[in-house]
Length: 176
Image 1 (cartoon, one colour):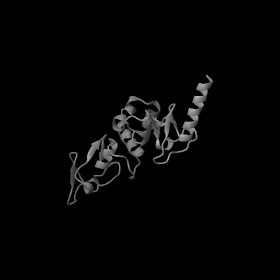
Image 2 (tube, one colour):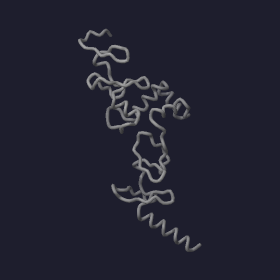
Image 3 (cartoon, one colour):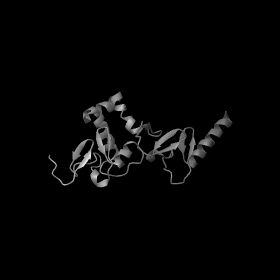
Image 4 (cartoon, one colour):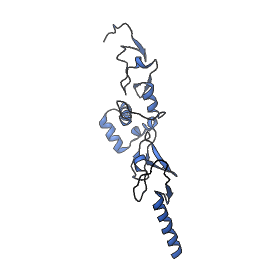
């Protein structure tokens, strides 16, 4: 479409209508938010979405969830959504190379499900847990802010179950 507007934007060696140069993730008009844009994985990004893609700031609510942003980046790297599903199932190198953008996901020590690189986690010793999985591994009681937990025999325990485990251990030692 020819540009007949009074003002135009120049970016990436091209000229743009003011309303056409948008972030591919949140769709904000880049001319309205500043003079900087980022180009990553063939996407045009605002500063906020670029920083999210390299995990420098936590992902907060916008039009797309962080999962959707990640899928857009990966789909741009590898092609279609069908290819994405096949690659996730086969974990081929081409899909795994997307970890360069988002980091390598870990596994939750409680549920054994993957932890995405952009998720907040709780840590005990060398184990990582989803926020919602971080609870006593016997009674499933979640911990309140500031409440102590005990990491014993590679398990997260509340005070009561920690005490019971210690008592059982001392009884077993005395009978042996």
